[in-house]
Length: 265
Image (cartoon, rainbow, N blue to C red):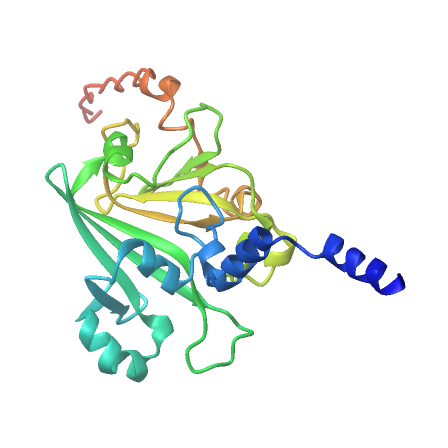
């Protein structure tokens, strides 16, 4: 009788066959299949393998020749065959180029390695997405050319400008995003999704939605750092993607005074 009770209890607590099959299916799925990016852009935080599964193999790979924006480009086959080992996998940026509405849109993905992974091929995660436009495009056109760029529309969304760039924050900070930050004080700060738009020829003093933009960086930045340490170079502005920004009236042009001649006494 005791044996029958034990068998009955075991059958009661064991999962049914459908549950066992579902459990086995979950175990068979690779762990990175459940990985998700840190923000709504869909890229930041993905491993290189996850990104390539999402977009396919890169059309080329580039590495920076110096601190300036000078790059060498390699075919994907040549990079994987030799340059990856010679230069180091972490210096390569995966490059994808698209043609959208007559504009060449080039994505470059920069990676950061996991400091705890000491293997020959350490895990690399996307830390920055660099998107270049040829030719430059009006700032208002960027959302149509970059589907991953969904700017906020509230006028008070944190936004800043300098003479060559516009910086826009969106959404709440993500504690998980610290994994791709290499700042010394990363644990003490909050890190948010940030869109940084650059104009190589400079931005007009009165910024409008038609201001030309050459490239966009999608990354993570600290709003607190911008407010506390970069206030001399980052001027707060209205969100350039809000209705209120587009409705601004340009200031009147200064009236030039006719210089009066000076006569000798």
